[in-house]
Length: 416
Ligand SMILES: *[C@@H]1O[C@H](CO)[C@@H](O)[C@H](O)[C@H]1NC(C)=O
Ligand SMILES: *[C@@H]1O[C@H](CO)[C@@H](O)[C@H](O)[C@H]1NC(C)=O
Ligand SMILES: *[C@@H]1O[C@H](CO)[C@@H](O)[C@H](O)[C@H]1NC(C)=O
Ligand SMILES: *[C@@H]1O[C@H](CO)[C@@H](O)[C@H](O)[C@H]1NC(C)=O
Ligand SMILES: *[C@@H]1O[C@H](CO)[C@@H](O)[C@H](O)[C@H]1NC(C)=O
Ligand SMILES: *[C@@H]1O[C@H](CO)[C@@H](O)[C@H](O)[C@H]1NC(C)=O
Ligand SMILES: *[C@@H]1O[C@H](CO)[C@@H](O)[C@H](O)[C@H]1NC(C)=O
Ligand SMILES: *[C@@H]1O[C@H](CO)[C@@H](O)[C@H](O)[C@H]1NC(C)=O
Ligand SMILES: *[C@@H]1O[C@H](CO)[C@@H](O)[C@H](O)[C@H]1NC(C)=O
Image (cartoon, rainbow, N blue to C red; front, side, top):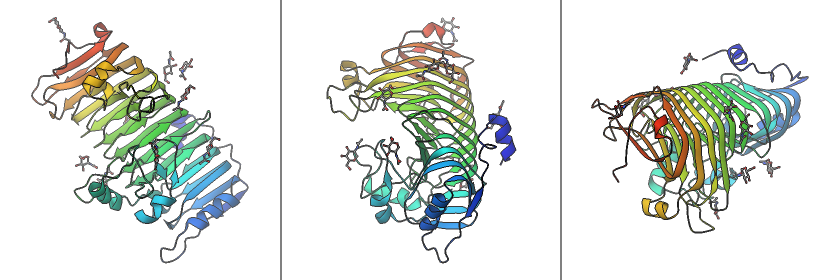
């Protein structure tokens, strides 16, 4: 794909020169597909600061990687790191993360960390795609249980100043990259190729590209994603995020949310800029998903509070997008009657669609935009909209939008 210098120039990044490594740990692989986990963990321990770690071979990984406390570290991943397709082993043994009972094969954290090298992280997802299609075991939170976990290939959390570039990720059992943390940080992802592709008739379910949670100052750019769920997803407390120059195929769009799922929680997504996105064969395009309200104080399906504010989707080109190139739902996974009685307590405002263009798949008839708010959404604007359905006509559905005069299309009310 692109060269390292390309990302450096593009991002104006400073992470590179600062490492000044004094030591190199090159990880040797064991013959005959033995578990290379112990050697990898040992290298990350030995070379945990002011150092370089080289992963230039084929590695079979059959045990959890938790590599934390890194400081000024370069990770050159030019080989292939492949997780074993062992559901019984990984389900209890992968690391459970805080959000939605997701688990991971590899949790990495540190300060000033640069991961690059053109290599591949292979999630060996096919067994999980096939098992999920028959067991439907997604637990109470929609992700993993201790008997059927679908681990995320790489989770970067509790970190600051991380740059990940020039890597391939294939066949993730679940979300591909999660970005989680509790404290301030910055992270940049550039020139990644993500491909979750099923060889059977079962989909590569839930194979989100990036899921960002409790993180700030994250940049994602110049990457190619082929998957079967969100291309990028902004989970609770994603702020100050820039996403640009992506080619997404087969996805569910670039999504804010879902938010407001848990009663008693406050979810914030703010200051997000998404631009220059090509969205092919997608279920949705630019998307915001917020649960409705819920009377139960312990609800795990709506009732949370918070806000979505200052979100810009700019230069979106869609081809064969099923449901709405611009899609805002404030009653996500909440039935209309419940949502009318208990409107969402999570506000949506200051959302801008600029130059959203393309043709839908026709799966929703002529509907190309659907913006349905339960409480009123404020300051939603659209300029440069140029959307069509295969039939040539286009319908724009809106409900409870305070600023319809700031939309460059005429709204019709939802029919249901
Ligand atoms: C995670 O799973 C446990 C049981 O495995 C369950 O008690 C808990 O409610 C789940 N977490 C969420 C957020 O749903
Ligand atoms: C991340 O940081 C939080 C807060 O310090 C801590 O509770 C959590 O255990 C850390 N996660 C990992 C996997 O190290
Ligand atoms: C993803 O992988 C499949 C199967 O190897 C291949 O056919 C497809 O072209 C790949 N897509 C991208 C975008 O690399
Ligand atoms: C938009 O993104 C594509 C990659 O999908 C890239 O080739 C193109 O140069 C980008 N355009 C601009 C103006 O940055
Ligand atoms: C793009 O997505 C479609 C629909 O999922 C799929 O049939 C096609 O193979 C994908 N193309 C590439 C290059 O991966
Ligand atoms: C999000 O941030 C707000 C404000 O700092 C905080 O009150 C809330 O608990 C956070 N929510 C989550 C899910 O982390
Ligand atoms: C959004 O950005 C503005 C301007 O930089 C800043 O004042 C505000 O605190 C940010 N909001 C959040 C929730 O981070
Ligand atoms: C809106 O978000 C963008 C992108 O993060 C940021 O540059 C801008 O300062 C924010 N504007 C306000 C008014 O917060
Ligand atoms: C919206 O409807 C008005 C009144 O029928 C019409 O004059 C105007 O051209 C329409 N605008 C668009 C963008 O279709």
